[in-house]
Length: 288
Image 1 (cartoon, rainbow, N blue to C red):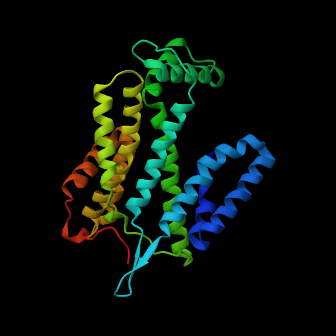
Image 2: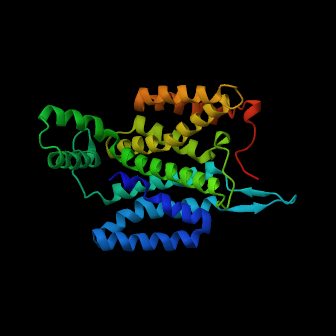
Image 3: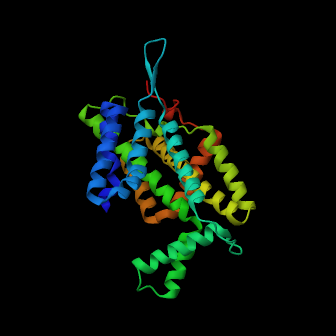
């Protein structure tokens, strides 16, 4: 089960080393292997969770252009992150489109009612020993943002594997592009627009539209959390005890669990809106 989280890693390593065609061939071979071992239907979720993000990362990350002075400008990591986030949002929309027609379920609406029923049935199968109160408490926690949890997990897995693949290849001297300076991360403007619109609609609308908008906003907030981490790294970059500071900050974030994401994403939003930079963290997030 744990190995499934690093399934994109070898595909991304092949692609970032050999190119998009090699990644595609490796992905098709992996899908055939999965189909042979676990059945043909198993290759589809593997394609969505591992092959698709690998192809997107490889294609976009290896884009570059030559400048008049002979330097090479590589596709910024923030734009790669934008592509992955857009795909995460698209997965939510596709999933909603595949939900069978449901009668409006009171305040929750059809989609949320269907999610509640589906998650509840799954819990009955996987955790039959839970009491009614425990099951209800779990549903209250999971259901409101369940689509965002699924898409967010997909997005996080793609990001971690992409960064890890690039890091491994750089250490081995096999990477086609230089490793980005992640603390100089810049996000595309459209991510801020999508976040603002989704948040506004989610706050004002009810039923399916509000439920969908709130989940889209939650997924779109993830890049801003990474932008907040980039700001923290930029702040610590030129300090003599930078490693210790970062270790303490990540330790606090780990102990605070998911709630720590809120202030970090808030810092990312501040950085996005003001474009503030310390002199030691200047630049445009592009590698040349």
